[in-house]
Structure formats: C-alpha cells, structure tokens
Image 1 (tube, rainbow, N blue to C red):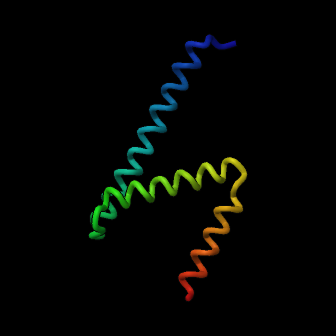
Image 2: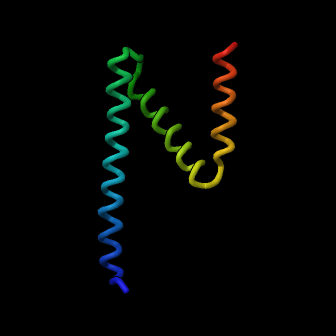
Image 3: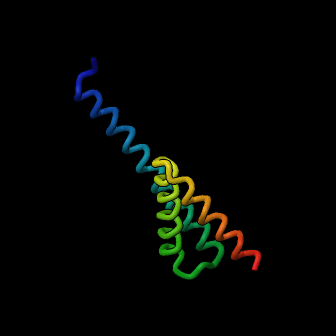
Length: 80
C-alpha cells in the first residue's frame, strides 16, 4: 500500500500538469482568435474553453447524447 503522502504528491504533480495544459489551451485559443481579428479575443477564448470543458465533462458522465444533440442542431442551422 502506498503512503498517503506519496499519493498526494503524485496527485499534485498530475494536477499541476493538467492545469498547465489547460492554461496552454486557453492561451492557444486566445492567440488564434486574436490573429483572426476577433473582437475581444480573450472573452471569446474563455467562452470556447468553457464550452470545450463542458463537452468533456458531459462525455465523461455519460451525457454524450447532449453533445450529439447540440452538434446536430448546429449542423441544421448551418444548412438553412
């Protein structure tokens, strides 16, 4: 059995790595949107980031049907 402190250290490292990755994604979104000339690129990047995070959580919690429904609705709206 692992010592609880070792598990905490491992979790802390994993958490730090994941948090850094998410920051990188937010920065990348901001950079790309700013390069595309989007007004208030930071706000748009934050919104897109949160939508992406919500989609990940939905998929992880068995709510993939919600993602599919939104995706289908978006496709229909693009066709009209």
